[in-house]
Image 1 (cartoon, one colour):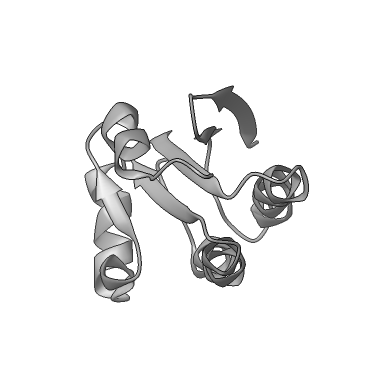
Image 2 (cartoon, rainbow, N blue to C red; image 1 turned 120 degrees about the horizontal axis):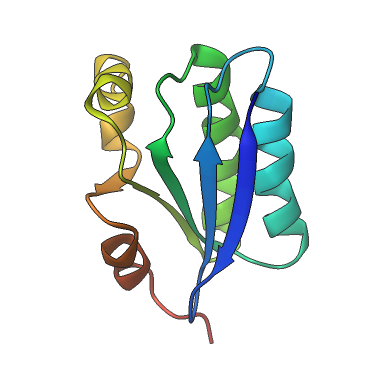
Length: 115
């Protein structure tokens, strides 16, 4: 089971994800991100502190939305990624595509305010 919680920061939206992101849950994961985009938010932080695993399907979701986010003048930061999950990003060279932060606050601070 995957749970998504949206939090608000001054100039960003934070999506707290809890659970495995795999072929069974990737649709919910993508829906959560797309809901933020559809609401006009392009400054996003995803909190991975409660994500023990991400499959290639989950990584595909991130690839599908990152260009859209950046095309809208925003960015997508990843926060509190567990070492096992980070290793998956690193093996597939996704560490060159995304910025990783130890805390949600640091990720939010790295986003530039819109407007």
